[in-house]
Amino acid sequence: MSSTVERTPSKISPPNAPRTRFWRRPWIGPLMLLAATFLGLAVPRYLTFDPAQANVPAPEGFEAHYGLLVAHVLCGTVAMVTACFQIWPAFRARHPGAHRVMGRVYVLAGVLPGGLLAIAVGSLSPFGPVVRAANITLAVLWLTVTLMGFRMARRRRIAEHRRWMVRSFALTFAIITTRVVGMIVGFAMYGEQMAEISGPTDPRMQMFSGIGVWVGMMLNIVIAEWWLERGTASQRAARRRRAVQR
Image 1 (tube, rainbow, N blue to C red):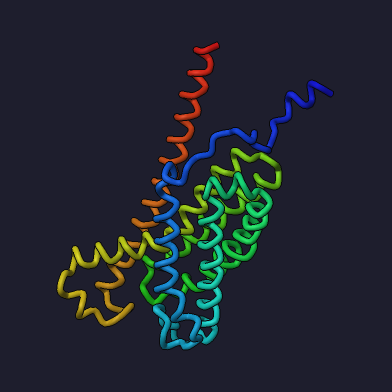
Image 2 (image 1 turned 90 degrees about the vertical axis):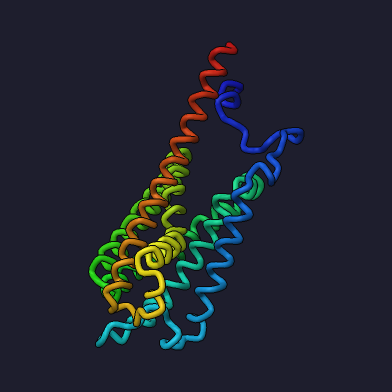
């Protein structure tokens, strides 16, 4: 009995255990503010259910496009909101039950339907073949890493679960990065001509939009992998320190 207790780590922190103060996690607040700002600017136009308000015009002859686009936006909103809480260390530690419930919502009501809808909508994007390929690639990667993370959680392989979900969250926020990168590239390439661009069929818009999606997606992937390797290196250093102290 005693050996079992020794091998099983306690999930409840000691009452006197030090807590990480919020200023030691300086990225939480800005991340939530960024998500709230983006959603506040992007989502309301779709809540009017007026196709004329959409940023992505429907392809000719595809009447279901707008409905799929709105559903994708709403699922993406669920994914982004729940992601902010899922990667908040204090929330995970203090509310493990809520973390598990929100994790299921993130996967089953956010990423899974949102990713499948992204493939349907992205495959007929009016922004050209480069953007179509990028959107489909992003959606497939988003679905793949998220389902891998969900699978690891179901198997109680928590360390692997967290690594896959870091990748998933990075791709969730790629929707912001791709737009920012696209606008930067657009102004860098065309400057004052940006005011003359007529719409998604304009080759200039297709050019900087395609670069924005590919570069923005890869940038988030690189950041996620750097973050994971940074954590792995810190753990190795901690193990070495403990070994020396023994």
